[in-house]
Length: 577
Image (cartoon, rainbow, N blue to C red; front, side, top):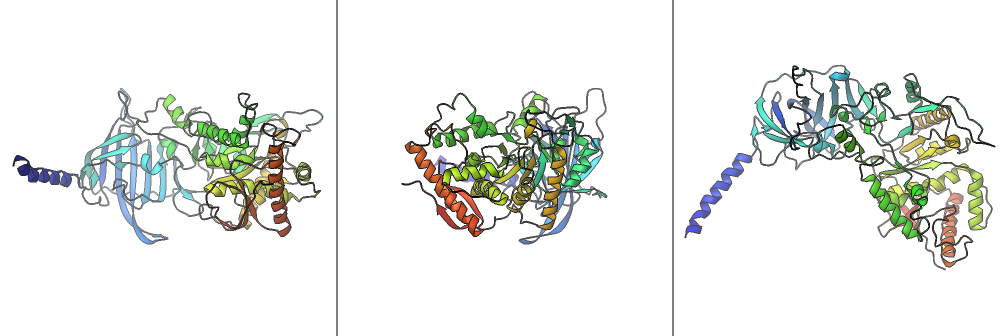
């Protein structure tokens, strides 16, 4: 009897509890929430003392799904006053956004950004960041930006005037101190827009150039160039040529951050970046430009290169190594910025800051499928394209002499890169090295653009690897001209259907080079494993040459058991007898 009489009482208590947790109506324009920061790390002050969230007017937005109402809001974070000093008048940053919903509303509905503006008083700068392909907001590329860098409602919290009483933000907690109303919404006039292209990244891997301004002879003895840092006057020249991706140091940063280009640098330096303010810049990508040659480094590793026996060994080991490096805080890891911030004393609370969007820069492009399968967003080939060795390699394998065109040479390479990228919805590209035939380099960059490459890079430094700066500029101009003449579909959409995929068995990769490090193959090419691989190579090349003769667009794919989509025909090449 006692149990039965308690049931309605308990239910009534539950109903009251649920009622208290239901938020009020959405904040009206002019609403203002003032929050104090509660640190998410024991015995450590938060990186900001308080946060203000202002609500602005509503605005009708046309979307592919129809017209919807969006709302403006503004976020400000202020630092703690230093001992004996007055509280700073200016916030660390002011973020103003037009979004599909209140950032403190129920997270069940994703928040979509239509516009994104940033004002940084300390730098005297204000910008609107836009995606050149959509005209809509371009957000910083940090993993889970919409949840980590924007306040979000805590579970079971109440609300005042529609403003949530508790929120999570940048790894910490915000506690509402008061909710105001009728706060005037000031106009931000004259804020320049930076129209950025995240689908075509043209750049070099260094922040310096050669002093010579031309090629040095590399025979009979290799010669090193004299390298000098880029100065302020160099950047307008490079940007006008079409370069939009730069590695910079502290001195060079002001010369690019207000331009419609992307920049890469570490958190430290002189002066260091400002946390969290500079991480709200949509054109700052982080400290990592690429993962350096995981395939080549694997081949050169004395711990394994004498015992790595099978193709499947190489594929499996490479995937392990890519994941170990990419998902790390090391020099080529997505968490490197997080490590730099923590070393500088930044309190991140429970937040993980990840820079996920960078490719491998690789000579062994044949392994692209396995590197992308391991999680990398893309792969850039180290392009040293020359026709004579390509013709010789094909003739050695097929027994047929043929003079290929530059386009055919390039399509062989790009078919492997693009086939791997399409399998995972990832990106690919090429970089031009000093060893690349200067007659082929122009077609290499323009054809790569035509076929959907996201990365078009150049290498600076290291003797004959170096591509002189004037040649980099000329190739960038060609890409810019091509992009102006031939608008390609957005890479964010579904890729076009191609004529044919030539699919090889999973675990293998196709190479015209000497695979001395796959020890199951004997040097003379006469054992069973070498004969099987030779048959696979010849059959793939037969299919490729057939595409050349018919003028068919094709990719070289890997048959991993999934449906190979996006092609009118899929030709599966088996080893067999």
